[in-house]
Image 1 (cartoon, one colour):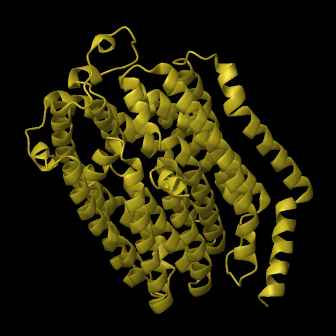
Image 2 (cartoon, rainbow, N blue to C red; image 1 turned 90 degrees about the vertical axis):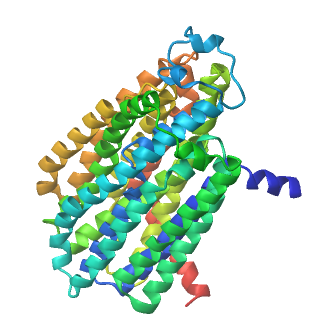
Length: 498
C-alpha cells in the first residue's frame, strides 16, 4: 500500500489530475453558489472575469511552453546550438555526447527567460488595461453596483503581472521533469485559492472580494516556486538569471515563442472572446448559460489533458536524445488515455451539470442538447489536434502561428455570420468549424514524423473513442439518456436529502 501511495505521489499524471480535480470540483461548488447568490448580470460578469483568470496562463504569449522545451533540452544534455531544429535525425545532434545535464545551456536559458518574462508582463498589463477594460464596460453597466467590480479588475491586472513576471521558476521545474512536484504544490494553491473564493462569496457576496481572494495566492505561489527552484538548482538559479542573456537563446526563444503565442491567441483567446462578443447583444440569461457551458467543457478538456501533457517534458528529453521508439510509445499511451478520459468526463458533466443548475433554484439553466453536444465534439477535435501539434513541437519546429491563425479566423468569421441568426448555437458551430480544420491540419503533420503508419497509430488512439462519442451523441439526441439519468439521480438524492 505504501508503494502504491508513493507511486501516486510521484506520478505526473495523477498529481496533475489532483490539481485539475480540485479546480473542477471547486468550479462545481462555485457554480451553484454564484447562480444562487448573484443575479444574471452579475453571474455574466463573474464568469467573464473567470475567463480572464483562466487565460492568465496563456498571457506569456507562448514563451512558457517554449522555455519548458528549452529547459528540457538542456536537462537532456543539449548545447544551445543543437536546439534549433530536431527534425533532421542525421544532424550533428545524433553524434553529440550528451551529459545528464548541460549547466551552460541552463544558465543561458534562465537568463533569457527572466528578461523576456519581465517585458511580457508589462505588455500584457497594458493590453488588458486598454482592451479588457473596454470589453467589460457594457456587461458591468447592467449591474446594480458595477462600480465596485472595477476593483476586481485591478486585482486581476496585478495578479496577471505577478504570474507572468515570476513564471520562470515554475517553468524551470516543469522543464527539468519535476512535473509531479509542481502539480502537488499547484494543487495546494488551487485548494487555498478556491476555498478563499467560496468563503468570500458566502460572507460578502461581493465580486471584488471573491476575485481578490483568488488573485492574492498568486504572489504566495510565485515565492514558493522560487524557493523550490533555488533548492533544485543547488542555489544556482539566481546566478543563472542574473547572467547576461545569450543572443542565441533569445533568437531561438523569440522565433518559436511568437509563433506559439500567436497560436494560443488565435485559438484559446478567440474562443474566450466569443463570450465578450455575445455579451454585447445576447440576453444576460443566454450569455450566462453559454459561458457556463464553455467553462464546464473546458474543465472536462483540461482534466483529460493530464495523461498526455504531463509527459511533454519527458517527450522533449526523449526527442533530444533521439529515442524515437520510446517517444512514440509514450505519446500513444498518453493520447489514448486522454481521449477516453474526455469521453468519460463529458458524460459525467452531462449528468451532473443539469442536476446542479436545473434543480437547485438556479437562475441559469444548463445549455440545451444541441449546444452541449456541439461543444463536446468541438473540444474533442481541439484536444485531438492540440496533442498532435504538441507532439510535433518536440522537434522545436513551431507551426502554431499559421495553424491556429487559420482556426481563429474561421471561428471568428463563422461566429459573425451565424451568431446574429442562431445566437449561442451559432457560436458553438463556429467553434466546431474552426476546431475541425485545426485538427485536420495538425494530425497529418505530426504523423509524418512517426515510424508507425498513420492509420495503424490512429486506429488505436483516436478512432475508437471518436466512434463512441458519435454513438453517445446519436442516443442522446434520440432518447435524451443523460437527462433521464440526471432526473432520476436527483429524485434519489431528494429521497435521502429532502
